[in-house]
Length: 412
Image (tube, rainbow, N blue to C red; front, side, top):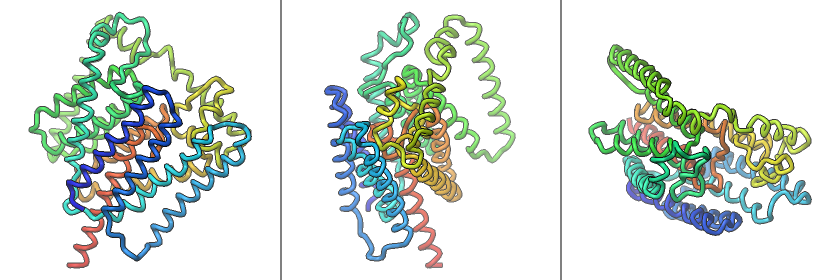
């Protein structure tokens, strides 16, 4: 497969996957969105199948991956079977395990078989950055008056979400876009416009007031800096000193500027909110799990209904969501997946230092997952983008790089 082709295919589905959520924002028909999303994933798979020259030989590792996916799907339908009489979900949501399985197959069965010459996703990152730049400029245009008068607003929970369905979803997309533009900057530091675009993304991220996204981006930048290569240790010490001194000066300016301090405290930090009820929420989730469902959970799409009796609608924690929807089975499978992704990225780091950014993104995402619910392969636009950048792209690079190394060793 040509390198350009896979870049365009991935970006095409970034755009296509947005359509169901634009529809949802106008109709509020979540069930229809589930069906649309299933269609998007199915078409995506057909594109991948059309690009492959599948070998007749089926490796044991592939069979094991398929078997693992089937265990999860089977456990989900068992969960539905045991809880269906409780009316925890609409029947339409039973399509979710199948959609997850299709996306899982794409990531771990089909993609490893795609051979790409001179693999490079810089083109995809540029297209994705351009797309999010449009979303950011649109957000600033329609919310300009709000942004310049935000300090005078009485309500702290704002909804600056561009054309996405909610501010956290926009925050997730910005988080991924910041990773993409950072990757482009690290490859070519001379392109000044990339720094300007990064600044615009950070401004939009701040105005989502999504604490989890802001924290994740901060963690990402720290990890990128720590992982960055610098041949001269003195320069790294000097740069670290500059960052620390600048941070202290910035903090002193904020503390001694009441209007700025009040703005950050009221809209961003929100210390009086604490975890915004998450402690009580997670306690309720554990109480529900202790009553049953700890092994297989209550089925994908059921968390909101399960928590309804406790006056909650969202777990605000990826790992709690895994337990509620898929039980220990789901949690174990996903933890194994995270470990696999981390080890893949470590392998890539040894080949080229530019790939260190993938583990920085993965770790920052896991930090984000503590405070918000984002399941990989999930039927949400933010999770769709996150799955592409955290799973699909690194996995594709890993298998192509590994294939090149093996072919070089055979020819040597």
